[in-house]
Amino acid sequence: MNQLTLPSLQVCESKPSNWFNIFCVGIVQACMGAVVVTTTTTLNRVMVIELGLPAVVSGFLVSLHYLIQMVRPRMGHGADQTQQCTPWILGGMAVLTLGGVLAALATTWMANSFVIGMATALVAFCMIGIGVSACGTTLLVLLSKAVGDHQRASAATSVWIMMIFGFAVTSIISGKLLDPFSFERLLQVSIGVSVLAMTLTSLSLIGLERRLLRNLSDLNDQQLQRSKPNPQVTSSQESHQSKGFKETLALLWRDQQARLFTFFVFTSMFAYSAQDLILEPFAGLIYHFTPGQTTQLSGTLHASVLVGMLLVAFIGSRLVNGRLGRVSTWMSWGCVLSALGMLGLSAASFISDQSYQLPLTPILFALGVGNGLFSIAAITTMMRLATQKQKSHENNHPPIQPGIRMGLWGAAQAVAFGLGGIIGTGSSDISMRLMGDTGFAYSSVFALEAAMFVCAAWIAQRVKQIDTGD
Image (tube, rainbow, N blue to C red; front, top):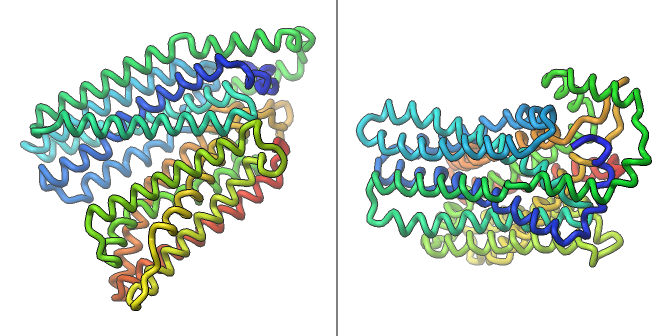
């Protein structure tokens, strides 16, 4: 898509057919999530339980696929150069599904030879990271181009709910098909998930990008006819096409807004992911909850995240005007509410040895709503910042295209997730050893996460202050 069409994307928001296109994007997102959840949960469980391997092995492999996603900016830049998203989405899904099958095969080989299986798993999880980078980055760029301002929040929520639905359905069906367990059955289920994901992705992408471009062209014909080519712009675009990836990335990093938003994504997602792996152990050690009770707590957290997501979708719709309609405002408020939730957990840990214990359910509900608010608001803002017309800060250089922007922010999110789980669990272990008090150790870690959310809220306000598009 050329630069002339980007400023007028908002006119597409009222077309009913656009929701079918968003549904197709959601199908691809769900397929991507289905393959990833099979490798990060099912294979993780098999390595630890059936194979008896140290948890650090599976933890390292899962972190590896996140860290590999530092290539996201390069994938986005490639999509910018080709001006097509479909080949990158389809190619990324192909690499992802092959990586998923290879990861299952590597797990079965570990039963006989750990060295061969581990070497194969390293290749497989690198493929998974590369596939997610290529498919996920360009898919979000395509979604950004497909919707206008007032659709972005509801579109992002719809797509992410479909991804969560893909997680749930895959986990339930795969779990039933894996019983009674065997390594042959594990490989069969993995192949089935990958083949189904590749098939649905291919069907969803048929004509998708062409329909979006045709809709835009039909609605903007008169504006495009009145637009006269600017020789300087044309020359700048050619200059942009000739610039390499490193030079373009360096130019993007000099953009204050892009740099601040990168810091926001990393800080908020780091705090978000650091809580995942320590929440249930905290409830078990401090509140003496059973595994069933801790699972219910996680269910409460996930349900409240969904509430926050739906609230942002409502805020961003046409039904709401005025200050409540400013989605970027809710990035800050979502982080503030998340910080309050983390402070609640910190207080609950600190007074755990007293005769009174704070109820966890309302604390986790507030935390989850805050998480849902800031995450969807951030994705919505990311989509708009990637596609809105930016001012060039370099002579004879046009605005940087959306792919490399989305790639930079996607890489920040992936690295934050990869480091968050490791540092979150590591911090709690170190705190327990140094302090000798489990409750105080958890309280310190939760307080640190609260401080990170406050920092993220401050960065979000800075982003909003220089955001001329909101």
